[in-house]
Length: 339
Image 1 (cartoon, rainbow, N blue to C red):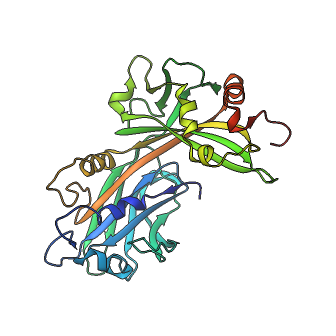
Image 2: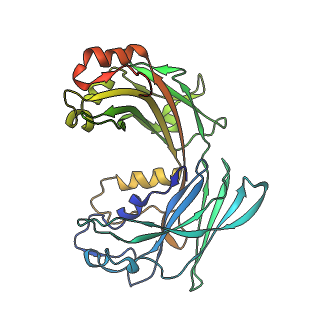
Image 3: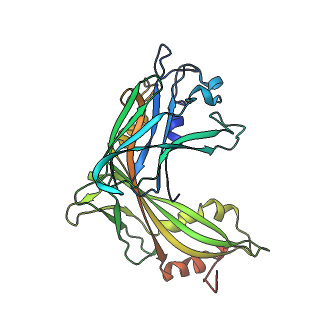
């Protein structure tokens, strides 16, 4: 599975919000509420949803109890819309279930050491299409939501390779694959990939340094003169970022050998629903105990869309030479043979 279109971390956030005591209830009076978290990614081979239920009681006691917030039967979950296999007609696709195992964590609160049930489909989705989610419970309650998928993007700049020599700001530019179809929010992350051979070892290990390059709404980042979106960054910042990389800082000895692999740019775009949810989650409200934003009918949670585009670039020879010449303590060398 090339991409896991799922964010389990958000499903946990609804249980860990600050409140005045340790009693948790999404809705009062013991009402069972279906909780849905997931997004549709047109680039993914498989799309997943996490569907659980609310519980009332002491969160510390009940959180490790998987059955407290999970259904003991398979829900009837359907996705209705147009799919790549038959793009001219709208049809229903029934989602199946699978399990992933969450390793035991002695400090973990939620479902540590248990299987997580996920609903999924391998049907290929289409860009800029509306999909309806329909969940039918055993008691006849129907939970619904609707979302429009995001259009993918193409990175336009850099073109051939990337250099970290200029102290002046530079641009990373990209364009929506569908004219004038902007996502609600974009985040741009760079990953410097490098290989390493530790002293006394013959095996090569692979590492990467994460570099946050910028983010913003589609309207904020859009340049109407060339129809691209962009973020500004300072190339020479790369060296200070690399100096704080945990592997570079904590795992470098005299005979550590390193080789530059590539620099990868990853642009993640999110839909309106997820963007609105994040805004509310980070609002800093002192009176908000649970998220007030949801797009789930007869339930709670978030059903949204996202798209990820990435491109790998060779690192300019001048930048590799700078790594070797100016930072010899990091152990970078020119690539020779199969390294």
